[in-house]
Length: 290
Image (cartoon, rainbow, N blue to C red; front, side, top):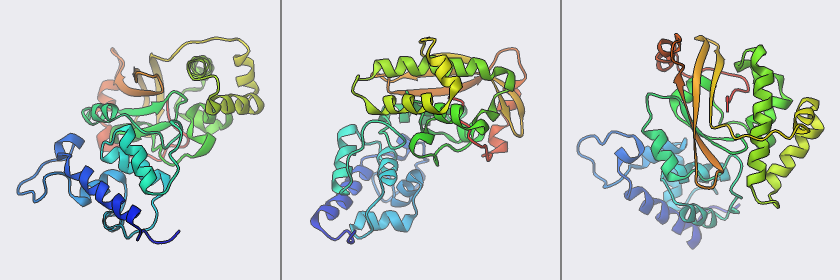
C-alpha cells in the first residue's frame, strides 16, 4: 500500500494524538513521574503499551508510516482505552475492514482493561467466550505462557485442547477427561447464546467434530454449563504443581470474560504463586488454562 500521505491518514495521526492526550498515566497503570510536559500519555508510553517501537508509533502520529496491521490497530485501541465506536473509527482511518466482534483482534471493553490493570498482584487475563485470549497481565503470562502469538482457529485454547496434545501439558493427565467435558459443555452454552447466524462458533464446532473423536463423543452428550469458577491443578515448568481457583467475570453480552487465578485454600500454592513475579515469563507450549 502507498505511504500514509493522504488526508485520511493524516487524520489517523491526529486522532491518535487526541486520544493519547486524554489519558492519564495512572489510568493505564503507569507512574505519573515528575515534570511531565504533556497532559496525557507520551508517545513512548503508548508504544510500550501497544507493543510497538517508538519510531513506528511516531510515524503513525505523523501520518507518514506504513499501513498498520489489524493486530496493531487492536493493540492501539486497547492501549488508548478506545470505546467500540472509536475503535471502529480507527480501523476506517487505517483503511482496514472492521473485524467482527470475535477472534484475537476483538475489542476489549475498557472496563475489563481497567480491572485487569488494577490487579497487578494476581494472574489475570481477558478471553472470549470461545476461549481466545485477548490480553494478559504479566503474572498471567508467567503462569500460563504468552498467548498473543496464536492466529486463526489455533487462537482458541479449546481448539488447541482437542487438536494439539501439547496444549494439555499444563494439566495433570488424570484431570484431562474432566477438563474436556467442561470445555465442551461451556462451548455449547456459548454457542447457544450467540446469534444462530454466527459463523465463528459454528465453524469452530464443525472443525472440532471432524478433527477430534473425543470432542464428537462429548458433543453428542449435550451437556451445557458455563465455566463460572473452577478449582484446577496446573503444572508449571518451574514451580511444579499449583492448585488454583479460576474465577470468571462475564461482560454484559457474555462474549468476554475476565479470568483471575487465586491460590486454593489449604495448599502450598499461595507461596508458590508469590514466586511468579520472580520466575517471570516461561516458554509454555500451547498453554492457556481457559
